[in-house]
Image (cartoon, rainbow, N blue to C red; front, side, top):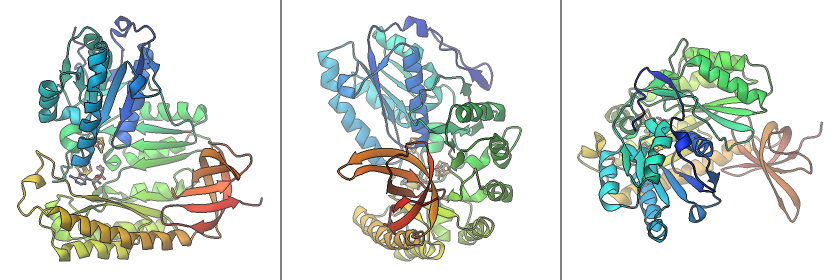
Length: 461
Ligand code: SAH
Ligand code: SF4
Ligand code: F3S
């Protein structure tokens, strides 16, 4: 049976044929790799599995169904998946009723799907990320020993109403858009996630309203490029409508492309600072104008620095983080030092740095002058050492301040309860408290700083 989901642009999940999936005490395990989009998709996969009657297995070893939600952004991510997959072969041989599926971004790469089909016979199915709503049908076929590979069927739908089993408790992901149109020359995402589509604002707002009513304290709006959100409003308008919902909560978002951070977005952040915390992830990728051009990023240093200046002017104390790619094809030592120079100029709170990884099918993978591995490693080492110092200096500025922390987790050690949470600027804080629990907002006085986190104590009222 084929479920036709191609009638309109926005569709309602029906769970068609889920009744036919009648597991008897069968359990499932979803393993997630990659970014927050995948985390959010895994919550939907778990929701559909529960809806079909599967229980949650504590580990893949104990599961009757294993679904790997994969990432294709760097070779390292793909290799991890393939080596883990190899470990499940014996499990399938021992019990042929076990179902092993691969979903996520690797399942959208034709070459990878061909490989899994040919050389990984124990993989029952693959589903590309845009089509996960077809899981019930695919599972039903797998249970009847029919292999199915859902790829390239369609990259343009938004399916609403997929059951979701949220993992976060007081924190939740809410996707506002899918796909990417930017085609940065190094990046596989537009190929595996398809073109940009936005959800209707009414659907997004209804989801946020339900979450807040249910006690959610922090919503993170997700999209590869949230600033391109477009329905009956733009992203700034969407943030305005969401933060009109009364309550004590925070709204974060990621990721923003520097080319279209609008004044309206900065203004709404400044205006709604109580609900939209002063934090901005603004991926730079490289500090060299030539490399930025080769990357197809469509901004240069000057334009980027202007955005940073505007953010800092309108939102005092804003915390800014970034992504950097080291060793893009042709990157000279001088061009790399321009990246270091940008790090010194902007003084980011946090930098996520990656060694460039050629992705088949992207323009950069075909470029001459790929940089040797040892050069890339040496450069990233230098960059990280420099940034550690800057991060520590930035964090030290918080010592003595009182921060409103959202508690995320608690553990008990020999000295009592140790809590971890996030400041408005998204900095991780560890502190002790006999009473506070995850989901509480609490004032914490910062007493000590490290490059990646802060330490504090309960502030006196
Ligand atoms: N849409 C987001 C996230 C994209 S993937 C954005 O544009 O910011 C997250 C990060 O992975 C990117 O910001 C980039 O720094 C890194 N990345 C993407 N492709 C890569 C590649 N081929 N090699 C190394 N890092 C890569
Ligand atoms: Fe990749 Fe660029 Fe799109 Fe981000 S904006 S997902 S880096 S193509
Ligand atoms: Fe990876 Fe796909 Fe996210 S490639 S980074 S899981 S969009």
